[in-house]
Amino acid sequence: MPRPHSPLLLLALSAVLAACADTQPPPPLTASETEPNDSAAAANALSIGTPLNGRIAGQPRDVDSFKFSAEAGARLKLTVRSVGVDPQSTLDPYVEVRLPDGFTVLEHDDDGGAGLESELRFNVTQAGAYFVTVTSFKIHDDERASDDRATNTYQIALTRR
Image (cartoon, rainbow, N blue to C red; front, side, top):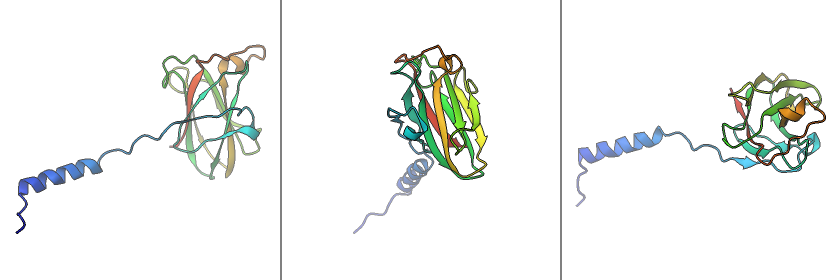
């Protein structure tokens, strides 16, 4: 003959189930950019909600390229974090978002995020594949400069806002 369940046991089980339902999903896994990705033709795919780790290093004037698809009317935020992800990072990131033509700059940023980190908020006006470039601010505006320290690490993330 089955035993009747205690009301106290049922109440405890209900509390456990409710607590499980209120938990947040685990953070997305972070992958890394792959080299070479220094041109639009070799751009790494960037997906909304999936951050990527990267490094501006390996050549004196490294640029990392990414591309993502977006629908017209999308409201997006692009962040490039350096010391906020890796306190040992030496990168002052500079980022540009280019329209689907690959040339026209939609937005650019040097330090719109925390400290020297980059953050862009933008609205997509036309559907298509957009391009992003990340480099060091040090080499962005000085054609003679180089910056290829192995500690130039960053994390790029594209999210909806």
